Amino acid sequence: METESLRSVSLRAHRRGDRGNHNSSAKDAEGGFYSPGRLAHDYPMKVMFRMGFVRLILVAGIIWMLLILSVLLFHVWSCQSSVAFLSAICNRESRVFLMLDTMGLVPKPQHRCPIPVASDPDRVAIPTGRTPDKIVVNLHYVMEDEQINNAPKSPPLFGGHETWSQREESFKLNPTMKVHCGFIRDGGAEMDPVDIKYVKKCRFVVASGIFDGYDTPHQPSNISHRSKKLFCFLMVVDETSLSFIKSNVTVRKDDEGGQWVGIWRLVLLKNSPYDEPRRNGKVPKILTHRLFPQTQYSIWIDGKMELIVDPLLMLERYLWRGKYTFAIAQHKHSRSIYEEADANKRRKRYARPLIDLHMKIYKYEGMQPWTPEKGNPSDVPEGAIIIREHTAINNLFSCLWFNEVDLFTPRDQLSFGYVVYRMGGAFKFFMFPNCEYNSIFVLHPHTREHSSKIEWVKNMSEFEGKGSILKESRGGLGLWTPYPGNLNEVVLPPVARTSKAG
Image 1: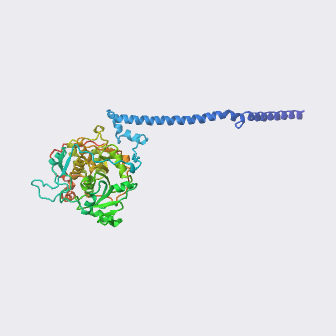
Image 2 (image 1 turned 180 degrees about the horizontal axis):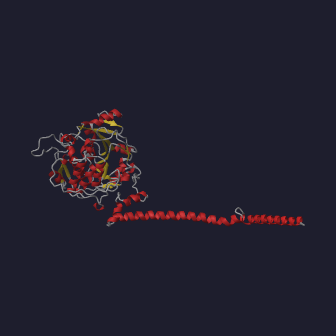
Image 3 (image 1 turned 120 degrees about the vertical axis):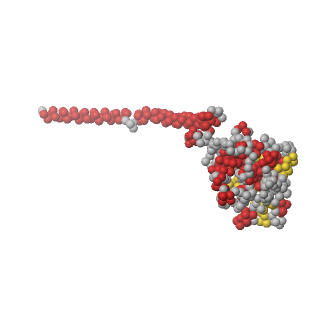
């Protein structure tokens, strides 16, 4: 009996186990994780999840782009706003500007951009005749150095002993004018007769210059056969540079005594007019019309640059297409001469107190910081490339520009906008975008770094005593001549630094 009851209990337990296993198997078969039914049920949810995630990403991207566009539009609007808080956003040193820059919301100017030149130099139509002179018709130059009354007798200066009253008179435009314009007799910078004869035939000129042996000539590229026949490529050098070039590259001599490096005809200027090589380099750069008086069109390019655009296409793009006679590039960073002066001090381009004195004279004479109302993109150019027709008004501008460089600091970018201001709108020019300027050339490093002791001067006391040897003896004399005005009360405008490089 006991045996039968134990057997029945065991049998019931076994059956329960079978039923449990059966139920478990049935559940797995019907709704397990890997079952076909469950996969069919979950698949649409996974697809919807993935599609929703993609849509979320797309929507977030669109919102981000709209946010960037809104911020940029607000930034452009705020720069023109009269509200001080909003206009402060344009200050590159403000916290708001730096924050936007960190977020990538500040547009960066292009370093290079395509130049819209004509497609074929052979199809460029060269204008006949010359642009007529209307404001200044007859321009004459002071050739003899006039010594100041009661002043000790001194050798003639290349720029002459121009007085403050003569300087002021030179800005009054008349049909016939006589102004200082360098090349005072026995003042230096004499050309060899062989070169004088050669340049007389040059109506179209690409000019460059090397002084104090800082560079060797770089051969231009992409020059058409027509331009090679049309243009004279003239490299102006001093005696130091000529010796340096001869020792480093091959110089070919032609039957008439002319010296050549590739396409460049070397033009020697004997007896450098200034102590400072930077100032000597301004002679062929600014006074191209005096060196090459028969030239009608010239393109100046600094000696450290390799020209990579056909010069005939440059004349068509920057002069003839827009009916301009003078073209120069806009500076990449500075708009105001006071900004550029600050950058020059930071980069030790000349004595800091003399740059300040230079700017105080301009401020005293009414030169205001740049604003859009002036009508020009900037008061500060990139002076390494100058494209011009040698008209009377352009020649006058070049003379007045050079006179400022001769009287004050050799930083010609500080004087350009001032002379434009003093000519009162009579001088018209095309200031083209900086990104095009950077597409005209390939920049090569100097063979050595330029440095002169005067560039490191921080205060006027350093010029006293033994420091007097730091003064230039033949240039910048206007900085040491008593000025006919009270500069002590002149306060220079505040400067918003637009870049670390200046």
